[in-house]
Image (cartoon, rainbow, N blue to C red; front, side):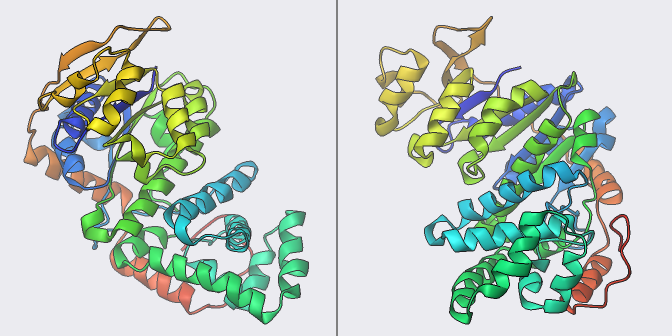
Length: 403
């Protein structure tokens, strides 16, 4: 099991290659997650689902407003994993709002996430409520046992003056509000439990397709959904331990979803049966630490046509003597270098197969099945959100999450 890194300009065949590789995994009965920032590629893959595997499909489609899937990144049943989960969520927000980030904002947000991970009804929508409503905060602290987190709320937070609180909290409210301003995203994140279990899905070889369509739900919302989904899949892989059944994660335009923890994911994922296939357009999209992690951990590398600024560096990684070859590649033609028996191959010139168009009938059947199995009715979801935002009196402590 090896990671694959794919680079190339728009329209050269990258997305088609991801679909074709994923299709082959599906035909082989493998578990797959496919994250698409545009939506068209996800729809293409949906049309290629083998008929025998329609029941395996979990479709996360924010544009399906009547039946929102539930995805709550603040729901982590294992207390030992909650601190890591809080870091991942904070990292996703930092990645999204890196141009206006600060240490106090990060400290406050991480503390809020850590608290809501302990709360049986905690979700992203509750972050502002936790800071603004003292009664809600007191009820939330009923579930918190971590001494450092309790110290923050009981000693540190009350010690701040109004100016510091205003400076620290205003950016949090602004960023959380921006992230959930879309009703479609709000209805996905505003559910106390996810409608699918990632660990069970990976162990059972399910098919998770995420339509993080920037053009339809907004760029910030799509990036947050994708980043949280990637980190959740990777944490699920780590939590299941070494596993014989492999699972394959495909991410198009992965730089949009790559948080600070991505370097660790790349280095650790293979141990836990998770392979990554990552695609994007040009090298400058990757910050240096991420670029080093990609080239250091992806055993296989496939390049479609690239621009002049990238040709020399890409040629060097491919072991290609003439960088100009990369400038002149026709669409669907690529040059690759692959790991065999622990050794990189010589550069190989390839013509990538065009994925079949597939069947809209199959896509519709898969969509209907996923709606029944992995979504909730919009009126119930929005009713619950309205109750949360109204700060209702919370019932006595319960063991699990419920509506």
